[in-house]
Length: 249
Ligand SMILES: [Zn+2]
Image (cartoon, rainbow, N blue to C red; front, side, top):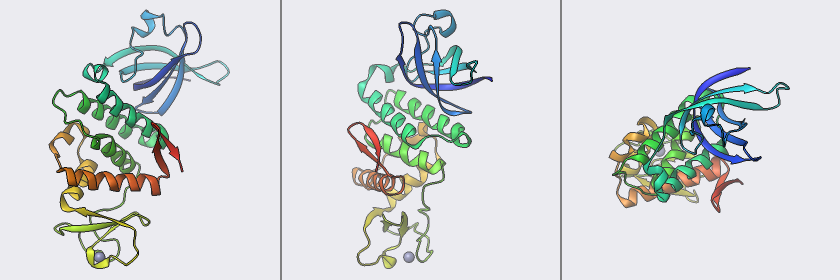
């Protein structure tokens, strides 16, 4: 089996003197690990493009016994510059990669995950990008939404009333659903959200990451949105961010 696809290099390592393993996100196949024999030397076959966060065109073939994938050739399509020089941007992109790996990427969602990761790198590559801890949070929310996990935040899960226009709504953590103030019950573990935070979350589901710059929520709304995403990822996806990686709870 042999195929060629666009891919984003997520991580790589040496496993022998001149050989590399490369983990990448392919637009068609999702997360893939392949070996690049001679990868740290062969400038002709890989033209120096095996570096984290590069977007490449890659040709891959199964080994003769079908047990592993062999990277035959790769060419560079896009390589970030600012992202490579700035540790803060790099940390945010790496955080997104960890979440991708923790969630895994089913092949039917690979195209959306590829566009999301590439768009997030474009956002982080912008000179004037507002670097806030919100960016990796929004990435988590969008990836979960693309995979069909994110709840409807447009109407109250208990009475069905539209939530648009209410100054305050509640997100009931255990149910992973939003409700209006009248339907809030004593003892619900809930987070409160203002309209601006709801608006940010709705737009993140709709807009590509390159446009997230225009969201500019107030610090309080950013905090509300982050708390909701964090609670959702923890309770409904069972993932917790500990010491620089996601752990299944
Ligand atoms: Zn209600």
